[in-house]
Length: 134
Image (cartoon, rainbow, N blue to C red; front, side, top):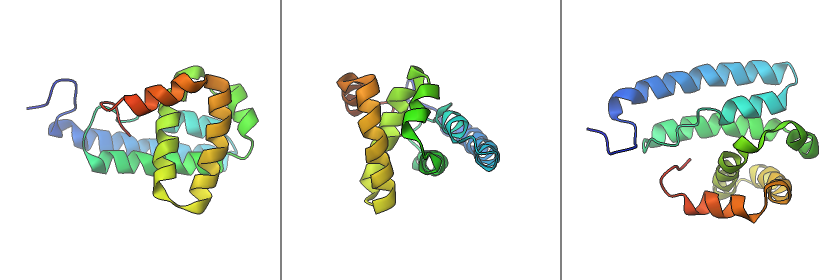
C-alpha cells in the first residue's frame, strides 16, 4: 500500500525503465552537442514522489551527466524554462553533497547563476520541500 502522494513499489520498475530510456535519449542529445536539451530531458519526470533510493540514484546519474556537459551557463539559462529551476536547484544541492571536486565546482557555478535568475525563493523552496526529494 502506498503512502498518500507517493509511488508504490509496483511502479518502481516502471520508473527505472523510464529513467533508462531517458538516459539513452540524453546520451544521444549530448552526442549531438545539445547539452541544454539533455538537461531539460534529465529534469523532466524526475521521480520526486518516490522514496526508493535506487530510483533517485539512477535519476541523479542521468542529471549529473547532463549538468557536467554544460559549458556555457549563461547560454543554458537563456534556453531553460523557469519551470525547471526548483528541480535543478535540488539536484545542485545533491551534487554539492557528493564532495566530488569537479561536480561541486560545476554545481556552484550553476547555483550562482540560478540564484541570480530565480532569486532566493528557489533556494528556500528546494530546502524546505522535504516531500519531493531528489
